Length: 428
Image (cartoon, rainbow, N blue to C red; front, side, top):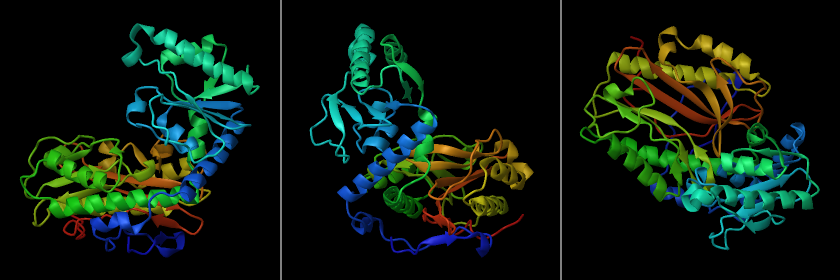
């Protein structure tokens, strides 16, 4: 994207968000080649190795994956990812020993082939009530019999079989077929937590798309534009550059910015309003670009409160990033950072300090309380969060950066601009 890699080491002092020059949005697609066979093979090989290791640690002989994010991770394939979040039309068996089996959506075109050469592909049985109605139970029994047969053929009958997400029909049908079911989601998310080099390259691509889309929005914001228009502009540019979907539609302006978590509406923005948003963008090849910005609408002077909120948000992001080092315990980092967020912001604070970012929002979370066990590792990608608003006030401000933890320091992956008016430091 024409900007140098940014690394923040523990020795280099407290980091500050920067605004490096960006390539024009039209250049994004030409900046990198299309996803090629090398990247696809590398991501799946890394994913299968980590998934098998995690299953062994959890004493799971095989995982039956239904969540489309997990299926994509371990097979390199994706078919209608939003649809299959609510309709179980494809699923994947990953044994600890032996090759995986993908049950693919029956009407999927034949070119949807995994980059993993050992993957066996079978037609999936759908038991969704959408297509099956009152036959959903009997269709689920067909699904379960097919899976149980493959498990017997693989010598896995009676073993602990992990499942990530099943509806009641599928779960009960597998139990009825004698399959010993245990949870698999924790094992798979622990596997996904450390990214391989090909995944990191794909994450860079997703962030380039998001940066370009956010930059376009920053340039286009004007009084009178509705929140929905702003959100449509952001997603329209992102989709044109290859993004797939956004997990949320969090964009609010003016008095709707406090508290957080309001979605875009038809409210027209006014000069001097803050407009805050979170991309939650699934980019090319399925990887998340998760960054937040708050901009000032119209070329005007920000208020002292607006400058203060932005300065404190930048400061808290710097505090978070300064704590992200391999070997640091999630709970200890969370406890330290919770004490550093000024008390006036605690009532409306964001739920998390940082969370994993990969094929969506992921494990682990660094939280203010109720912490995960474990520690930060090199290769983890985090989105670091700062929402600052005082309870009862009519403005709040959201900033978020996506970063990669390395042995040498923290690499900043998100480079969309911060607001040139709000970055004038204020302490009032």
